[in-house]
Length: 493
Image (tube, one colour):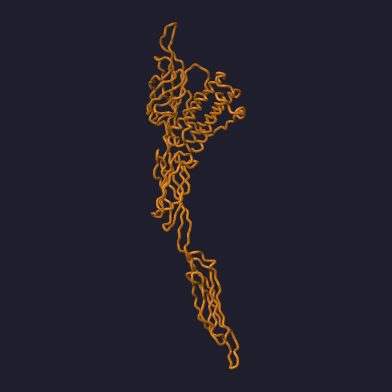
């Protein structure tokens, strides 16, 4: 009997629809409708696959490939019968189409779970998918036969077929013609992937000749996470000669995979961003302007004053606080002082008489008396800087249904003033590998109270409720942003 370990293929075939399927929708109850339905479920699987990484991506990718191959085989087999009602198909094509229907239903039961349920129970999802698709490879497409066969199993307490609970339990194994004589129970063995018998549970009658119940001890799963075990079932009928019934004769053997869940460590990290402003007193130097006076009188001193303003250069809230003076150009005596207001500078004082040659009859000017200087005001005022900083956490283990208080410390200046804003990104990880898509990207929120601010939101799929808390108070150079993640609804498997 052929056995499989977890498949490692991750490429997915792009199916080319039959021309009839492209031309018009397939009528219900036809081979074409079954194939279109299977392709739709395959699309769901591919969508899930894009959000997985690492081992989970490999396992789901391999199962998706097997499902894609099955669709291709049935599509090729029924290429001339797409519009034919299933009941009118030839027997071999009909059983193949029915088999695709069964596989599609089983895969859809898994792929249609809400995203949070898939990730909360990723081990069950992957193992269930591997169980269904491993059966494709082990059993192949069925042919018309009266021999017994197995189709699926459902454990007590589970609503989803082909999912193995972590703690084992009693399974209802369904098939065709498994227990046809009440006194002749089938023989059941549980085998490992190398055909080693690891258990021989005693079956109990089910509800019909097509099923039975069997206990599966959790010890059978120990150390076999990620592997596929197999139900090997031998069915019997009464041996008869003329009108005498004696003994039993084997009617056939059937095999059904049962893949054991393996734990996928799931974690999430928080990246928090904070934007705020810091206002401090700053200084700026204004443009330089020339001040100057001259006296050419040989007889009189001259009182002088000159004022200049810098209104166009001074922002609101700023003022002149001092004036820088260049080396003066002074000839003869003078007394000039420099003063300033918030926006202007004034130079004022007196200049002595010019240097002249004086006679009783005339005054001859030799040179003037002058004072010249370049003055440069310095202003100060409020200087506001807009700052954005970020902080992140290491991946934190996801605990279902709620993962609480994942807190990121974000550097923040203690002198910050006014309202600040913040936003977060939650990034999921599987077995330490970052997934391709974030779990949640939060909107930018402004904290007008300058006190602890909280809000609640849901992720883009509506699967999780995210509660975010921002504490703007600076402690040891950091503020803090925390997130809690809660699964919405109940995940039933």
